[in-house]
Image (cartoon, rainbow, N blue to C red; front, side, top):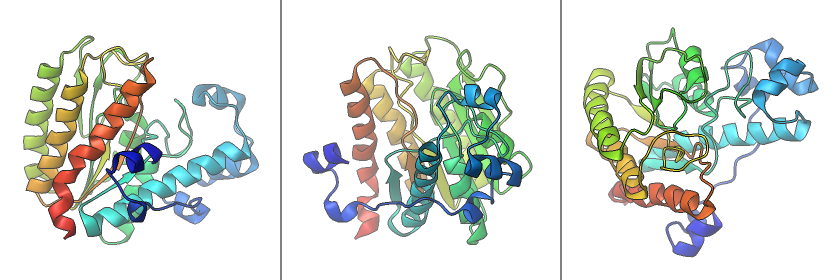
Length: 274
C-alpha cells in the first residue's frame, strides 16, 4: 500500500483493512476437522512440511486476515467494478489440508461468500505460474464456479488437480505465445459461463527469471496479461476482485513494479465508479 499511495495510484480513502475471517465463514470451504486442527495448532507434521511454514497461531491468524481481504474485495468489487487484496492467492489450500505456503483458500472463501449472497456464477481466473490445485478440487462438483488455471506444466504441484479449464504451458514459454493462449481462453470462457463475479489470481511469478516459475514473460507482457483479463471483465460487465498471488523474482523491484502494473491496468474500471 505504501508504494501505491506514494505513486498516487490509490488514495487513503480507497484502502480498507480486513479482520480475521470468522471460523463460521471459514467452514463454508474447509472441513471441521481441519479447522479444529488449525485452531489448536495441531496439524500433522507431514502436513506442516508440505505447507512449508512453521505452524503457529500467529500464522493461522495471518491466513484468516488474508482470507477476509479477498472476501471484502469481492464485496467491494460488486459495487465499484474492481477491488484488490494486497495479499492472497492461497490456491494450494484444499478443503481438508494445506500445502505450498497456503493454509486457507482465500479465493475459494470469497467465492463461497458470493454464492451465499446470491451470486449465481463465479469465474476464478488463476494466472499464477503454479496450478490452482486446491481451488480446483474445492469446486470440482459445483457448476456455479468455473475454475480456470493457466500455469507452467513443470512447476509445483507435481500432481495437478483438474480445473474446469487448465492450460499447462511448456517451460520457457514466451510472452507472445502466453498472451495468445490467454486471449483464446478468455474469449471462450466468458460467453460460456457468463460470470456475475470474477476472482483473479494475478501472480507475477510468470516473469522471466522468477525463482519458482519456468515462463518467460517480460514486464510489459505481464502488464498486457492483466489488461486482457480486465478488458474481458469490462466487456462482460463482470466485477473483478484481484488477489496478488506469487512473485519470487530475485530482483524485488521487478516484483513490485509488476504488481503495481496490475493496479495501473485496473484503472480501466474507473468510469464505473463515477
